[in-house]
Figure 1 (tube, rainbow over the protein chains, first blue to last red):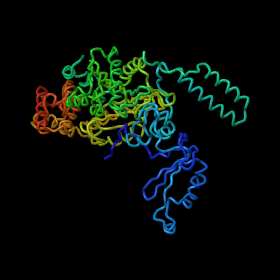
Figure 2 (figure 1 turned 90 degrees about the vertical axis):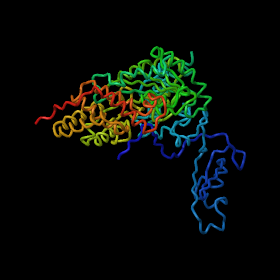
Figure 3 (figure 1 turned 180 degrees about the horizontal axis):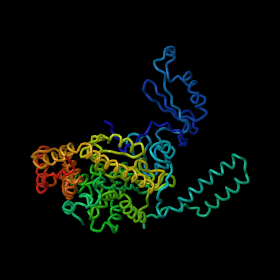
Figure 4 (figure 1 turned 135 degrees about the vertical axis):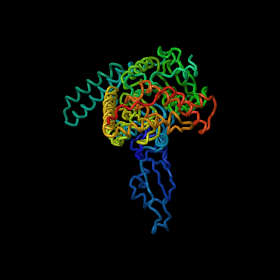
Length: 204
Length: 361
């Protein structure tokens, strides 16, 4: 018998997070800012590390093949001839996988478990990840319905700016700098009209 | 404030089939999901955070002109049977019934409008109408929504629209649905095709009681899935067109059954009437199946028009929590089956045997 999935069931796939937001973490080997976070999984046991770019390059982490052969951590030298299992390495540059929403502390991983987000700011914080997973769920990827009265102007403005931005990058790639300058002027006119974005009316 | 007993004594018009054309489409329902900017969604919020945000939300909802003398209660103030009764009346969701502290329900006096506070989202505005009237239900909800947005800072994003706890609701936050009675399509074995076709159009079909084509009482719900990238108007138009087509298919299926096998139909309807009228023990599965057929018989002229309303009230009144509420105590399944039969017998007392006028010799 065909079972009909609930409209609220959220088919989230395993995610491969690619966005790059550098957090203020220190490299494990020197005092530089860590920008490379990697997890090595050997026989099912994961080990997380944070490194700066130069240390990472030195260890050959950005080149998974080199890392495999060069690292002492992964396998004891004597075992190299007959490895039990190939270690699986996930390298994500510039971002730890346990990033949490600054608004509510929600980790994106939690979405896979609960199918629900933590707060409205999660949409801003995990925007790319969420957008990447909306495919197939909805008719489109941007809102075309009703807008709260207090936000109508800001909404139209944002959409107008996005349109101009698109035209601008087109103009630049076709080297039409005159047009690009005009577009840039137009954009700054919109943004200078109200330097503070109109917020929705808060508590009376 | 409206009391629980008052709510029970006066079921809404849509619960008993007020619309002149609710033979196939029983009800239309609109639900909007709304959240407050910056506040954690109820499912992620700590209990204290839910409790803290509740009074302001509840105040704003109670102040709506439509909510004058409303039924307004915290879930923690309701017994588990009372919560279950509200679920059976479609006034709260199963998810909300599982909640207690920091969650509330506000229902207007004629029960056409209910607002769930701190369910999955901060606010779930819901309106139900008898018959196929999605647009009217939406009008009422849109008005409420406009009032509330004046005083509550909604979470809204220029790209993703209204932000909701679950990304499946983001955008318009609109879920529109209708409840359909499709015995013709089930008996003629065409329901599977219809469910598939509707599914391909991006809409969801599910049984009201039970899953898929096995739905008890031949009752199905059709709803939109997508909430982003389409305007409210587009969503309602698409859904309405599909529902109208399914209604037509059901009409055709009934005509075809009448034409091809009137004896079978007469037999099914009359036996269902007999079983209901003379049963002393009946479980809900059997009851729903027979009520559905008497309801079908009423549409085919075998019973007077009032029989349809009688069936619609019964569908609700024989559900487990309704029975226990009426008995005013917890009932074992066996006790429920006896009480269910008793209620059905008394309601059918004045309903005379079916008149079969569609068999021509």
